[in-house]
Image (tube, rainbow, N blue to C red; front, top):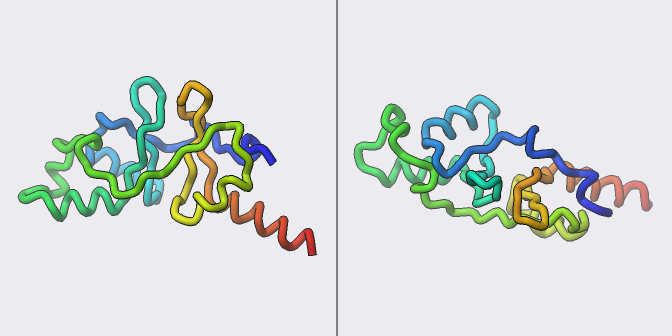
Amino acid sequence: MNIAFFLTPKKEVICETPKSTMRQALERMEHHRYTAIPLIDEKGRYVGTVTEGDLLWKLKNTPDLNFKNTEKILLEDIPRHMQNKPVHINAHIEDLISLSINQNFIPVIDDNEVFIGIIKRSDIINYCYNLIYHEI
């Protein structure tokens, strides 16, 4: 099955840019209750995912950094510990199962490497569940 059926389009995905600040990401993630969000560059390309853990490690490992001055730290300057691998829109849902083990979502890009949305792990699990219980 083609993944387009499972795609959450870019306009419905909460994203940040590498030039966004740590504070912007923290506030947006808190507001939406997300543990990770994609980073999209000025050309619309997926460049990575920032996680709560990345932000916490930066806070822990940066002397004198506190919530108030996180507005001075750009996301592009924060080391990322997870590399959420993107897939092309022509991938099949079966190809995503192994990726979803370690990723909350899988970024989807088009043939020009432009970010077009995500596939959520919950959608992959629901697909697998339906396959198993409708095949029995």
